[in-house]
Image 1 (tube, helix red, strand yellow):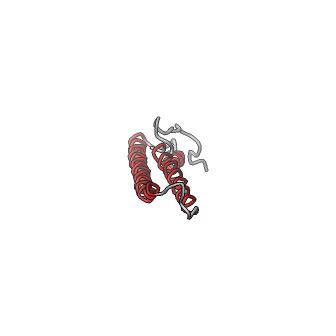
Image 2 (spheres, one colour; image 1 turned 45 degrees about the horizontal axis):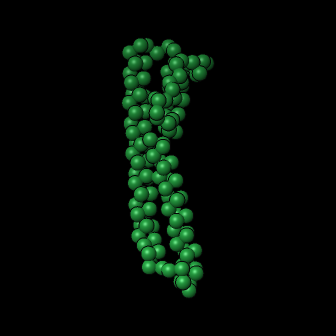
Image 3 (spheres, rainbow, N blue to C red; image 1 turned 90 degrees about the vertical axis):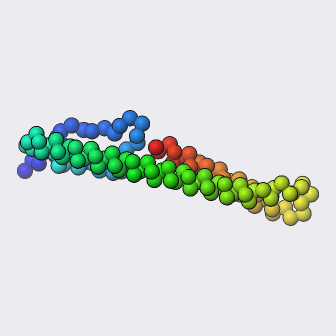
Length: 123
């Protein structure tokens, strides 16, 4: 029995907004739940509900990405406070391992900055 699978209009994501897994799911739901035999009023109601759900899911994902970027900013700020020890060191420091530890802080800052940038690019 043909239930309208694969028929109908494909809805592309809005420009500037990456397709979140929820948006991909909504596209698949549209193809399955929108058989051609639906009357116009029912089809419009279903389309409207799916559009609203898609917008809400995109906003939820955007909020999550923004929160992730803020978390990375806070992590960087905390790591920078540890780097303040660098100001009191000289090249004559006898414990050379302290330089490696500070170098690792820079690496962690770079990683967190990359992750924060990636989160913002998802917006």
